[in-house]
Image (cartoon, rainbow, N blue to C red; front, side, top):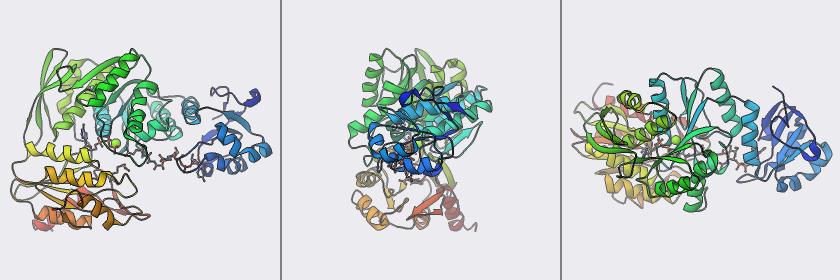
Length: 490
Ligand SMILES: CC(=O)N[C@H]1[C@@H](OP(=O)(O)OP(=O)(O)OC[C@H]2O[C@@H](n3ccc(=O)[nH]c3=O)[C@H](O)[C@@H]2O)O[C@H](CO)[C@@H](O)[C@@H]1O[C@H](C)C(=O)N[C@@H](C)C(=O)N[C@H](CCC(=O)O)C(=O)O
Ligand SMILES: Nc1ncnc2c1ncn2[C@@H]1O[C@H](COP(=O)(O)OP(=O)(O)OP(=O)(O)O)[C@@H](O)[C@H]1O
Ligand SMILES: N[C@H](CCC[C@H](N)C(=O)O)C(=O)O
Ligand SMILES: [Mg+2]
């Protein structure tokens, strides 16, 4: 595929035009004829690698003024077409969109600290139930009518637009994607043509990357103040205080807002909710019309996520009656309040991806009305991630569960014992079992009739990252093994 810089909306220094064979941000992936985007990074400036990219045959370089200074010698020597942008990450996002061309006709995005994968997956499921060919893109990869693994929750623009164009060419008409705060801060999805966007909630995470809560919120708000066009619809959970703030920002831009939540001011409102062992019954008020329906999903918050998904689908033009009638057919999202096993005594084991203080609290509290006995929670915190959330995660578990086991969850380059100590600082009464398989076995062993075990943190993940190695590990599989071993099926 060849495209000229001018076709890609880029103006090079001196008005020079070049035919481009592809795009790269990593010099190690640069090929002959590429435009190399030398971006300012968290650790380095990509301009450090301009020489390497030019040696590999890059014909054009996109960077900022800082990058021009850093790469001055290599630029003078090789004389590529040079595009200087104020915001080279955003310029790359627009360029990637034009380079790969096609996108599914209807695209939506969802942001928030928790619930993005769930909302994106439910949105894709609703579209499929309505007969459309649809995908969701996020933490669990690309799923639905076109599938691929995804290295990031929000892929960088080159990968993202390559995937969107392949999906569109294979007939996918609808796509729901997760907008992570990293993805938004780095403008990864600025080239996506969005019809609607949703906000779930805002609590602590990723304070290792975003310097302050304000910076973290500003990144998320960018989905509504920058990426979503003014004629797009914002679907906002107004039960969250930050949701109200976002609603104000959207109103200032003159955008249509659909408010979801439990508050009287919501357009799409949960007015009743009744829980049992396998799911919940919901009563919904949508602009004055009442709907009552069954959800085979565990956890009150999943109903909120389903409402955001229904809101997105309706924001894109679907008929409300049709949308509400297919909600009972929704199936749970892998690793989110997923039923993993049941002991002979009826006690159940669930796996959930709760990896923030709020998610741990929400997940345990959400399990409570489905369970008559005690709740045992297994928690751990990841290495090389926000350290301040660790004691808060321990505290959330201690406050909401009857018994807590602290274990390892991807210690990465850190000392696992030191991470556990930080989690235990918030849960001093908890039991400490470093080995995750043993922690699960102990948790399952402690289950009496009517109890439930909630294994938090890894959800759909298939490995335990220790140092530079990833060892195969699956919470659902370990739960089944533990139940089989203890109930004599092995
Ligand atoms: C902190 C972060 O988000 N970093 C992302 C960022 O890297 P960076 O630009 O800061 O990297 P850098 O190491 O400073 O290098 C600067 C530049 O030099 C380039 N380079 C570097 C080395 C080289 O030999 N040649 C070369 O060209 C790099 O490609 C980069 O463009 O831009 C890169 C390209 O787009 C991303 O791959 C990279 O994601 C890293 C791998 C990452 O782990 N990100 C995670 C934290 C992330 O994005 N997570 C979110 C959400 C998680 C959640 O919600 O839980 C996600 O959306 O997945
Ligand atoms: N609406 C919600 N409110 C509060 N907690 C939630 C909500 N939805 C999900 N959670 C909790 O957050 C966990 C992660 O859910 P999900 O994967 O949908 O979120 P995410 O925003 O995609 O996470 P990530 O940032 O890792 O991509 C769930 O396992 C659950 O514990
Ligand atoms: N994708 C997120 C969540 C990981 C959850 C948990 N298993 C961990 O390793 O911290 C991250 O990388 O921060
Ligand atoms: Mg996710």
